[in-house]
Amino acid sequence: MFRGIYKGSLPPIDPSSIHPTESLADQLQDKDYYSVEWNKYFDQSRDIKLPGTENTFRIYESNINVVNDGYLFVFLHGGGYTSLSWSLVVDRIKKQNLDKNVRMMCYDCRGHGETKTSDDSNLSIETMVDDCATLINYYQDEIVENDCTDKKNDKNEDKEPKERLKVIIVGHSMGGAVVIKTSSTNRINNLFGLIVIDVVEGTALLALSSMKSILAKRPKSFDSIKEAIKWSISSNTVKNIESARVSVPSQIRLNAEDGKYHWIAHLEKTDKYWNDWFSGLSKEFLSSKALKLLILAGTDRLDRELTIAQMQGKFQLILLPLCGHVIQEDDPKSTSDTLIEFIKRLK
Image (cartoon, rainbow, N blue to C red):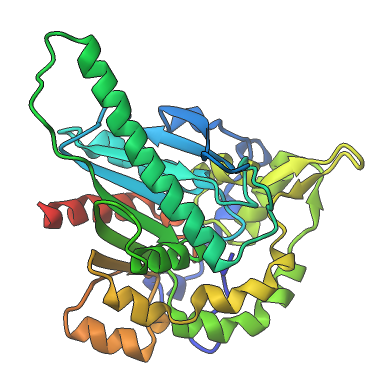
């Protein structure tokens, strides 16, 4: 959502840019812009309806056999994106996690993807924080309950109590704001880690004034899914064609009236919430008792409060300067490697 909005500062120079090279769009042919289904990267997808509500969240899972004595990554996407923004990261962690002690779950936030709620237009930070905490705790309880049922049905199963999964919440952009503010409520059971990707209070608030014009420049619709994927690459919204093939199709939906594909998330109608998403983020991030990691595309994103705190060693900072805003899509290898290393710090 916030690609290109950090005006007034530039990312570190890519040495290869000294000698002009072809852009990714120039290197691709029309046949390269095809879509890929989610099940290439995830074990399963299903819907969870939260008890006592009309809210049904679409989730995507991997390593669903991991039910205890390990870690649970919960991923929250940025504004306008969906769970499938994490596809390549999840797939790489699954393949690299040799001892199989990491379970992963992504969910579509309300107003995004395939999630359906009683009010999809309500993207207030209070509502999204409540969604986050309620869904994660329900999901944890569901894991424990299903595990207990399986043990009762298996007479040979070890009846010794196991340790619940340690929860690590990961959020990108808008999702980063949600995980920070959810962490500060202390509502998530067994929370051990907080990872935020490319969102910082100071720069985000400064950039809000340009958000409407940036959204206005996006195409309102596309004639085909292929056209949408091609636009995401040519506009540098995503710098990885493999990720664009799976993530972009989930952000649009065919409109029966005009036969075109329109954005699912109506970001331009959420502007009244933007300021609250990011206000107070730095202080709440630093006050979290969880182990903290911030992944940025460049140090220019850091505001003063975080710069001082980072120098004092209050959180870990990882820079991936050749990425755009959607770091996990542009460089899933470095992102997944960083998350796996983060787990080692928790041991």
